[in-house]
Image 1: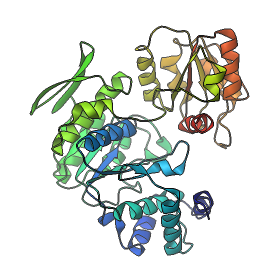
Image 2: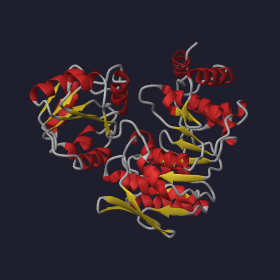
Image 3: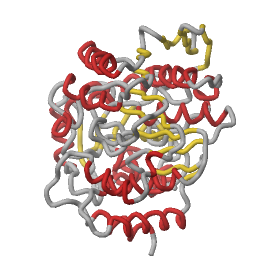
Image 4: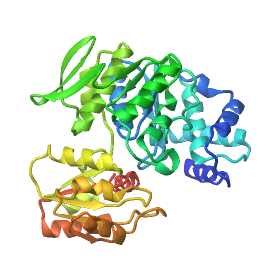
Amino acid sequence: MNSDRLLEQMAGLHPKVMDLSLDRMHRLLEALGHPERKLPPVIHIAGTNGKGSTQAMIRAGLEADGLKVHAYTSPHLARFHERIVLAGEMIFEADLVAVLEETMQVNAGEPITYFEITTCAAMLAMARIEVDYTLLEVGLGGRLDTTNVVESPRLTIITPISLDHQSYLGDTLAEIAGEKAGIIKRGVPCVVGPQPDEVREVIEAKAEKMQARLLIAGQDFHSYEERGGMVYQDEMGLLDLPLPALIGAHQVENAGAAICALRILGVDTAEAALLQAKWPARMQKLKHGPLIEAAPKAELWLDGGHNPAAGKALAEALTRLPERPLYMVCGMLNTKDIGGYLAPLAKRAVRLTGVSIPDETATLSADEICAAAQAAGMVANTAESVSAAVAGIVAEAANARILLCGSLYLAGRILQENG
């Protein structure tokens, strides 16, 4: 049996009544022999935006120092295997099948969510291979996230927090911050990226209760652009560095948290962390595939950001590119704030083309996206597919800059279809 079939079976185990707790995780992990207690030292990362980019920079820095690293992230873009990196390599199909089968057998048909059982499988795989560090990215929230079963991480990190997933995490920034701060553990240092005051206050209160040392951006460490480069400064001194390979002012902020984490771990590879980090679908320039062949004179960029903060960061990142007419192709889920996402981008685009995300039941229709764009003051139309949208754009402006955006699910589909 291949991994796709096993994952499909796992999805069928979802509880009929969903309760937000860690009870199912604790039950299965105990039956598996507590792999979460056998993981190599864990760096646990929560936040609304920047988790993946920060993880990618930390991983690049650790690996540049000759250290071996596991990494767990979600969702995947093209293949589930992306979620589980073992000693620097994406998990092989045979190994994934073996660990999924074992986890399914031990679970014995008990109700459990897809993310819970696959996280248990990932922890089982990572616990069996000795490396130097495990990078563990929160899926949703923090306090009740399936990854929050690690009792004593080496370090925790909270990247910038903004409004997202309100139906699960709360309607205010303070409520959401309370959930994210749930990863803070007693006596474990926590690196905190730039936050609004009400978020920082919640994190500080949690850290005080847990007697956890905080290192806060703008207070304990600073990262900023200067003369075409980046400056990082903390109590250990000042570093003059190149700008991160990942584009945008928000990536300078993420880089600051990553460097702070590396310095806590005693790793001095800041430049490698910035230049060698790779994180697909975050202002990624596409270089090959059918879309590129259909638009040889155009630039195609892919970004999976999907909330208002991501829209603002994307708008800023676009200002760093040489001048070209900007056209957007957008697909988005109906659980997202599309108006808030489009607002900072509205004045930058010549036109937006709305598309639905193939095989996603929660997708907004192309017509709904078009209407939202028009409400934001944009010229907008629809297309049956991304390829049809790109063809329509290059017929009008062969040298266009085309931004494919709005959802990681759309980004994953594009990456699959373009190698």
